[in-house]
Image 1 (cartoon, rainbow, N blue to C red):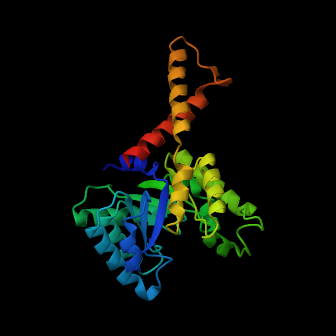
Image 2: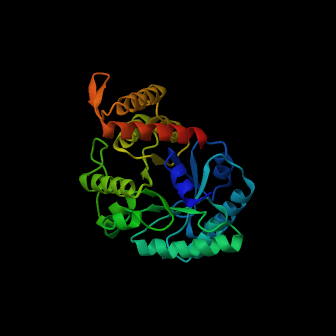
Length: 302
């Protein structure tokens, strides 16, 4: 698959689900999950002493397991001793490398070279592996989101509050009502804008309250309404909630098709704005309708 085709496909992935690569039980369960992208995690969920073994487990799983979902590997940061071997394995077997602690386009350029070498060694086509970046984990990265989003191989951009909060010395990421505090809302919005400006998937961060389905549902619906294309999940019970929030419902798709047909009929008479269901609509409404249809059709093909 070409990088452009992979970028288009990534925009249809609703759930990006973390699977700890150190857990045989969770790896065995992963193939049955309804996530659109499965992220084999070599970073935060794996203790330092277990990282080589987790990488071997991930390699074996990727080599032997056939899944509908996209196969993503979160590697360890470039500053760690595990990164080189992680990238070599992921570049040989995965669809996408999820890179943490990205602070600049230079980080992505170095990653691009390592993936290129892995593709060549494995006999894979050049630039067939995409990159997703976690790009708000340090204050420096937040100020460089635009350049990061334009980095080589990038198919998706996501954000995270936990590492950023540690870097800031923050006492919390959310207020007493569960809403993000202002600085984290800012990072989230900037990540969305950067991804949209680059035409890549914008993936919302994790929701850590595992027993709060209503809170997850509200946050996922709000993210989809803002323009995020999907969301990270950390427990299987979160997957159907997020899939439902990001999947366009049949009524919305039918209305979008009706609007596009009406627009084309009016455009044939030279009119760019017209009344549709009691409201004036024009080019921005058409763009939203076409984007919704593209997502619906992409989800059906993925």
